[in-house]
Image (cartoon, rainbow, N blue to C red; front, side, top):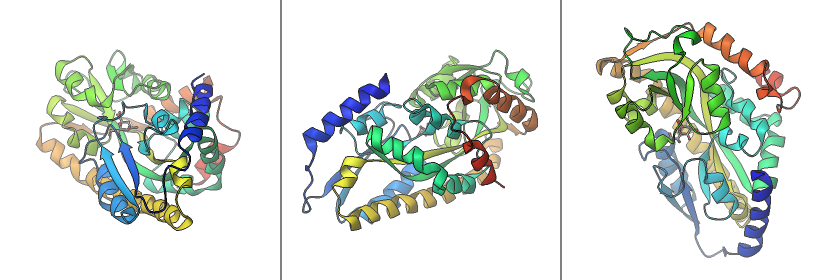
Length: 330
Ligand code: KDO
């Protein structure tokens, strides 16, 4: 399996490069993400994280998946080819299926709920497993935003009220099982495609739509090639700041604390920026000619939740964790 192969790769990487960093050298932190440089998570890492660790670390960001392909970042960290990424629960679920609980539609309620869940002891076994088996530390939770359905078709052609209205719609979803399952649970026909291909996919009509939060729709200019956004809020989406355990362990305790604090501070800064954009962007998008409207969100929530609970999508969730997550909600 992918996980077994990675365990071997991690062991090798640890043997080969242990002790590479010395106290005098600045440690190089290559970060790879499919996100753009102007994405609020990228901005927060560059403007808050990087300066806070600059005494001992050289932060080197690579955007638009230019260093590592979307979905391969964790593997690259495990093998020592990358030090940082902004990873997702969906990507972690390819190694550890139980992470799909954090990638499930309508589980997280808002940005603060994500933070409470991340800081709760319920996360400890999840974090520990990623550290032990992949050599990756999850330092902080970043807020990407509420994902909505964004289509090329105008509303006179497709009016999205319930999951039935998405039947036959080729909805681009990121390329892992957890994402594809969510697309199906929404009632659509999910199509995997890398984030960096989405603009062209929409422009050429190879897909009918995509799902991302409003700030991403604007930042990546998807509004130029789409006509409507149905505010399904089907996933309050998050990313984790992923950091090489090998590099972390090579730092002094003070530096380790600085790295952790810097990641938490960057996440908080990015979260506030993203929330502000979500609040501001509906009127911008309407000004660009898109219909932005609320469908029957209860119909979507009921349908999506039923797909998870009545299939083996929830089979790997540890006993009691969903209840604990719900108890941390509003
Ligand atoms: C996407 O591919 O749609 C997605 O939004 C998935 C997220 O997990 C995250 O990786 C994000 O892309 C990228 O960071 C680009 O914003």
